[in-house]
Image 1 (cartoon, helix red, strand yellow):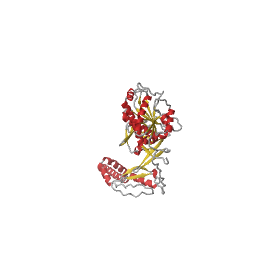
Image 2 (tube, rainbow, N blue to C red; image 1 turned 90 degrees about the vertical axis):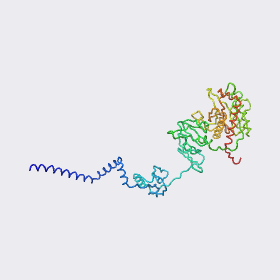
Image 3 (cartoon, rainbow, N blue to C red; image 1 turned 45 degrees about the vertical axis):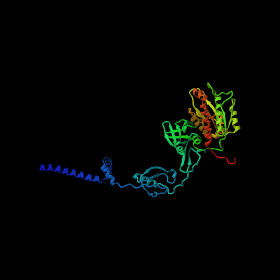
Image 4 (cartoon, helix red, strand yellow; image 1 turned 120 degrees about the vertical axis):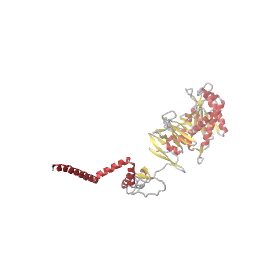
Length: 466
């Protein structure tokens, strides 16, 4: 009897243990918390078990297609699709289409979170949409009128519409350079030190935070340095578009053809100008002007001169002659000089526009009103550009580019004017060239050709009643 009692206790404990395990496991299967935990664990394992992941994909139903949200309280009807298309998902206030923002693009279908987002947004839509305000667009010539902090200029053509966005920086307005590139149908190419706008037959080069640039490989001084943001977004001043770029790439209008030209040989008489070893500036200016007069006369122009011999004329007297003769163009001829004997090259100056710093200066002159020459800002810059381009092509001399300055003879001229610096008389090499008759003929041909090219580039619009 004692031995049987001892054997019954282990058997009874084994049956009790087996029954408790079976009972709790059945209860665990019925517990929803443990069931969700198992499903989560199963999903985690699916990342590491490709076979289980394929099985889950087969058992998952396909997602519903996405429809664009319309302005009403329900989804807009699904459009018919042909081939591979993408459906645009819109969010925002449907009553005001100006505030819509395209947040994402889905292809034909979207997962469950996006469908829930759509359902939540449509539930909050107002019953009556707000009226949509039509935006006004500014046509044709850009940057003529005062603008708010941000403004859009629109250029309409037969093919497309180009907008030039604008921002205000302090009291100045700058334009997006990529919009300007599209306006002139150019492509942008970035460099480490700047950016270039390119077209088949033209190019515009800007350098980071510098006024120096080039147009069609002719160095020019822009009115303001371009602004750079994040090394990819460039902004240029509105005056560089309305004066510099538009004078080269847009029509320059005039009331009549260029017929009368006034040449002004700088210095003279007791005013020797810059002194060289073998030639003085007043002598070089007069001899060149006489040859330029002969070349322009041969092309049919009527040429007048402020002085045709070695005589002294003040700046006021030269301006008085310009007002008296009323020419179509005023060209002042000079030779350059510098303390640095190695300085060389040709440069041409146009009158500085109103409230703009001259080349080499950071602050504009304190002037309350524009000068008479500022009425021809676009003509002045185009004239200086054509003369500089032709001079360098003829002489192959150093190209110092087109610049702006407030010299009295050009800022107070009553017609388009330019001042030409034909070279440095303080440079021994260029001084020897001045004495050479063949090189001087190249200078004359360059000036004559530049003036003639400017005259041909004008678009004549006769004034009614005259």
